[in-house]
Amino acid sequence: MTLGVISEAPGLDSRLHGSQRGSSRETLMTMSVKLRRRVALGLAAGAVVVAVVTVFAAVDGGPGAGGHVHLWTLAHPFVGVAIAGAMLVGAAQLAVQHRIRRLSSQAAAALITVFALCSGEAAHYGTFSDLSEASVVATSVKFEIVSYRSAGFFSSDTIVLRLRTREGIASREGRDDLACFITPESGAGPEWLFGRAEVTGKDEIAVFAKDGTMWRIRFNARTLSAVEPLDRCRDAPDIMDD
Image: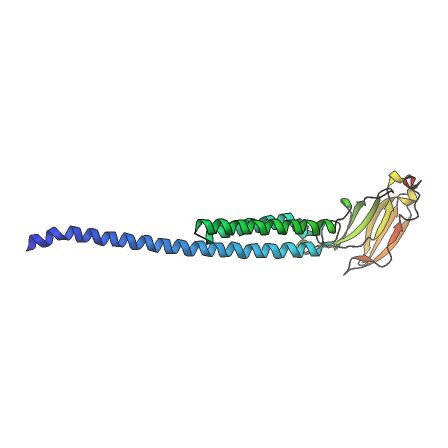
């Protein structure tokens, strides 16, 4: 009797170990599926956040169009849409196990991404700014004066001045010009050309022409726009007009 029991024990032990290994594999598979779904959900949520930030950045402004300076990188739709699209494709890869369904989900995510990118590009170029060559020409504790070159159509280019706050990550730039000067290529004299600028008060700047003529311009600190903008472009002599 004792020998019979001893001879059956190894077989029983083997079945028990096999059952435990099977249970461990099922547990690991269950945990793996749950983990994949959680990661997929996180990627999908991240894609939504990126899309919302991109839309906000585009509506807020962009280079030459004002708004929050540190959002300008995301103001172009390509960056946000590309990131959000990659996150959606990754979420589909993790969430859907069936191969055909997974490929279908990824294809749908790719199509949505392409459509959003095309729509975003159209909206972006619809608000195209012709300002370039940004340069900070004056600084105070709270503000900066930034000059831009504005391309002329059938006329010489101009130099425009914008006001920008110095608030770290919350820094903003105004959408309106404080002053406008013609460029030297116009052939205009120094009284029509931009010389330098200074922030002279909490709501005032001083702008100087090349010949030293000075104008004081008051501005609204909330909108960052001038009370009375200075225009030295409209009446300036320009060889391009001849």
